[in-house]
Length: 245
Image (cartoon, rainbow, N blue to C red):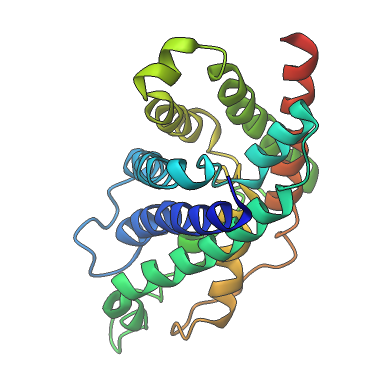
């Protein structure tokens, strides 16, 4: 695959992933959304479907990594680092693009994110639509959660490559999508399961600059955890896979 194909594929695939993921968070969170307050299970499946759509779309061009942790894990396992920067750049750009698209889909809802006169409802915090927020702010615990959750993503992805039938049938991406749903349901409670540095960093950058009324903070003091944790987890998964398999 050429650098151009990788770059374009990762932009498109990651943009689709974030469009679905931030979109479902907006649907569940924002006032005047028909899906408001539909819950965590809906969010987990929305992100899983985002992986499904994004990875299948990007696969012919780039292999559909969509996640720096996956790219790093593969590089640690194979020792091939020459194209890592292309993947990472495409993923960040795609994540930012997807966040902007999700904002545009819910533009009216974001514009209505104001406290109405005489209404007991306060403006809806918006950062959680774009990026992760820990339920309990404990940097050590939050970092450990992200590391373990990312190993639980990347190690199976690497192992799926050994399952010949999955590759031949073209169902690998479907299985990975269900894996992401499972991680969200089982491991997502403490931090919101970033498990993908681009998924958190790109939309957080966009949130900082979007003209959302009463949008609140972008919480840059926490932002290093959903970047460092998944990168560490991806590298450890690649190392474990290389040693054990």
